[in-house]
Amino acid sequence: MKNTRSTVHRLFSYLIPFWKGVSFAAVCMLAVAWMNLVPPWLTKVIIDDVFATGDWGMLHTIALVLIVSYTVKYVAMYWQHQISHVVAEKVVLRIRTQLYEHLQTMSIRFFRERQTGEIMSRVVNDTEALRDMIAHTANVFVTQTLTFLGIAVILFAIHPKLACLTLLPVPIMLLLTIRFNNRIRRVNRRIREQLAAINARLQDNVSGIPIIQLFTREHHEARTFRDENTDYMNGVVEGVTLWSRYGPLMQNMSGIGVVTVAWYGGFQVMEGTLSVGSLVAFMTYLWRLYWPITEVTNENERFQKALAAADRVFEYLDEIPEIQDMPDARAVTDVQGAVTFEKVRFSYNTRDAVLRGIDLSIEPGEVMAIVGHSGAGKTTLTSLIVRAMDPTHGRILIDGQDLRSISLASLRRNIGIVAQETFLFNASIRENIAYARPEADLDEVIEAARAANILDLIDDLPEGVDTIVGERGVRLSGGEKQRVAIARALLKDPPILILDEATSSVDTESERLIQESLSRLLIGRTTFVIAHRLATVRYADRIVVLNDGRVVESGT
Image (tube, rainbow, N blue to C red):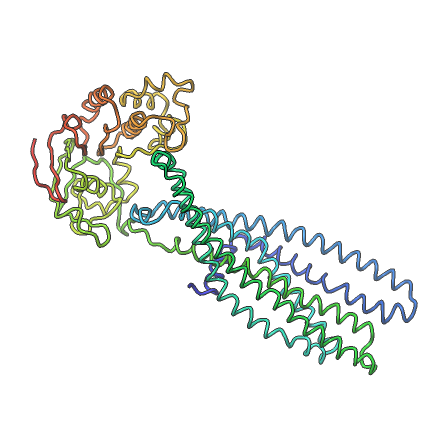
């Protein structure tokens, strides 16, 4: 569990760029706190002075002062609320954007080890909790703390001994709050993790609906989802149980002070050492003294939820990207495309090595086919070229330069890839093809589509290249999605191209046309072709066979 103070300090460091708004909101909070002190004191004046003297002029003045105080309080509360929420939105925008940008730098391993729903929960739900805390809870803490301190000063001014008796329960209430905070924060952390698990389950379920229905597993999935919701509900109930013990106890503790003032204060009035107006004002201030404690107590639950959410957000922000630029990394230009593997080994965590001492070279413009059974290490080999991962041992060179000495952005700008599992964005065909080169004009997009044998399909669509393909390209067939991905890689026109089962999802006729296009377009381009079928590698200059992470055969 992270230290509460450090978490709060880090959270509020995000407020520094908005210090002007925060400062004005603080002034408004101070004004609200001051205005809260006016009515009880004027009540004392009315009872002790106005009623005793019958001074109508003073009564009118007091009424006017009350009107002014409530007007000032309204205006101050308006601006406090307005500014606090605007600042909260800007802070959450900054945190959420920072978290999103940080996630873009994380390695493939990071995403393989975490569920999509869990990541989404931290980016969306946990940052929402931070917004509530900054916009509302911080206001309550500051305003009510100022009110408490102001009332305490006035109580000591009215009757110091009575004020001391009144404040006796406060240390006990603070100790109870500290003890409660330690317990409820652990519970809230667990609740947020359970909520993330529900999001992950729902994300997985929606994506897998066709398989769930095909295997008639609807009841099983519903039961699993219900079990996870039950875990979440039990966590919430545990938190409510803690709150049910803490909240009423704190409120009843304030009753000790009320009884003390009623007994001792009444005795002082009868003794003539305290005026009736002072006692009434004291009692009124007393209720207002405990009200800030009650308000802070109520907001404390929201605050603890926000701290638990902040821990989860900062946990991701503190993750160091596994793959990042070296301090001396530099951009490369005029890449020829010579790629060399020197004694490359790779393993996922503690698993057995996937690649075992690969020594391999490919000349600029050469087309190399890499074949082997599933799990032989073909895709892992090409993933190392784009630095989706780094070798466990050995190194990879491009044009004689170690990949790790080349900036990631520069490296990846010079490599195109068509993966076995095609991913398309929920955007138009044109946007998907031009994703690698957003500045490409329509003619270039059309040419790439023609080369990938997808132009006929585009021409048949009512909206042509502006047709939205749906989430993950759901409105296109597998072969059509694959051809859009091929067009995207071709438009990028990189010196190095990776085709990972690039024609695995197209029919025979489409494959023939794509192969004809590739035979022309691959001239002068270093290309890795990963495939099982002979037709896919027919234009390769060299074929490399992988087995159990080793090169077992190589030839033309």
